[in-house]
Length: 421
Image (cartoon, rainbow, N blue to C red):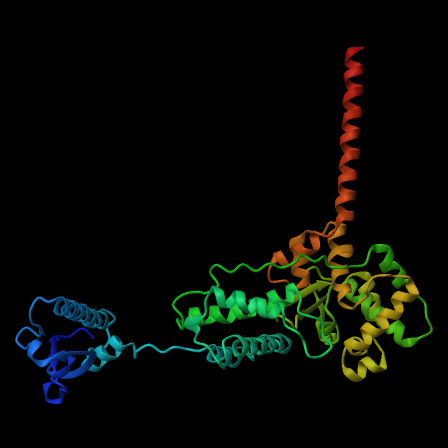
């Protein structure tokens, strides 16, 4: 609020409350005839104070040091006045005093950030994602209590050392139950979640700097396991009189030909099967995990399974395309199917999604941009993980290239011979 303002700074001593002839030095701030006093936590002998100059008398070393200190405090007070003016804030003696003493700054704590984050994101993040955040926050609380001997820490005190120490805490953490020690990628995930919360604080100007500037996350690269075409065919060709295994086989194969995750397959209804842009049948839904729209043209194998369960009583009761089954039971039954089919891999329902990305689409020449869209990935970098593991496709493509190059070489040699003759 830039209006006409009178401002002055005066140093004075409170001689009336002097003890042993030593009086405390104060700074008096006056703005538009209103004033307040600030104790400078310094004392001086009454006889050594020059009231007219508001400074210590003489040229002794002690007097020079005190006067230099008073000059510095004068500059700080004047700077506070200038900053309030330039920020269009109300300039009052109390406002200048608060700024000078740092009382205008609110220091937020890590626990405040955690509470704020959970309150603001509880309806934005999936419940499983929130559960992961709660786990990270639990480890943070244990770390602060154990390493800092405190129940909380100011965000302004977070630095590179805090991140490194928290990383070491996670790596050396000894679970009290039967769980395994925290691995590298899980450690990085916990730090990644902390980083997202701290970035939120930085954007809200709760902290002046990002303590993660120098910290680098190091994830171990892991290949996504998927079924080969032969392994998938062995499951498709499986014949059994056990109804539960037939259902699990069908659900798994359906996911292999659509790329739709377990939680989303279980939620599919007839309303999700619609006519697509090409006039064919498409599955149009949203990923539960990210709320990302997914539109998948229905391949013949998937359509056959939809038709198979069209009048299934269990599916009609639940109002879904397929009878519902818990993920735990489904994965348990998949182990039986793997044994029967002679598959040595750790068969899980999520492997169907990986199989769709690799064996069904990428291996058959579907562009990675299209696969990314079909899977509902927000970043193509996520899809590129699958592209890195298709060594068979790379081998086939290179062998095809060798044949073409060899054929060209032979044809050129024949032409040269004919021209020479």
